[in-house]
Length: 286
Image (cartoon, rainbow, N blue to C red; front, side, top):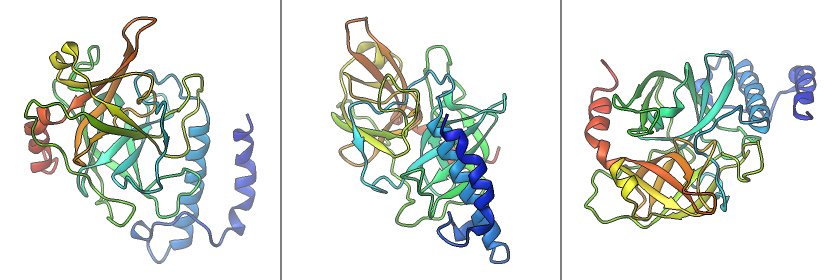
């Protein structure tokens, strides 16, 4: 309730703001610099408000449980994906930069339209954050929304990302030699308490260990088990393993039984290498 009361005070203070604004000079013209900065500042405050409210029924995976806050900007490839839904609501998924033109996320994060927020760590501090609308979305052609197979999607940005210390791409694992990468990590802004309805305002991370699981192999996914892992709000984020490459996309979670461990699944990137190269190789021009 307190979060909703911040909007009137923000409106009254707009004219007084000259400095300490959210700015991304790369996307603001010199003629309208101040107005652009003010607009971005108030949108930043709106992002904070939305993240502080409920998850609006998001039921897929995306909560960093058992983790901790990431070192600021230690994962410059991370993308906070703003989803504009058909019903007019806004919700969020995770994602990550493949290059200056493409973001990867989960296919179940589909929406009417999207805006990619780059360079975010703490949603209260949007200095240097780049907001780039998405031009085109490419969910995997064989995505199954019931089984969450091929739960992967590419997003073509409307303008190129501006790389700097806080915004960088990450390499993909291009092959799977059959040996399971054991030591990996996931990150995101999803909630960090199973009893909470609020997403985290800071980027969180947690280490996970991949396990052999016949069901996961059949669905072309990696899996991890236990209390620690991703959940609601972290969908679409990267599974990064010890070689620094992305092996999977955060997809879904389930309980094996009431007393059993949680199982978290990640769509395999090596299994989709040809599809990824086809989309990005054509620069999304179809």
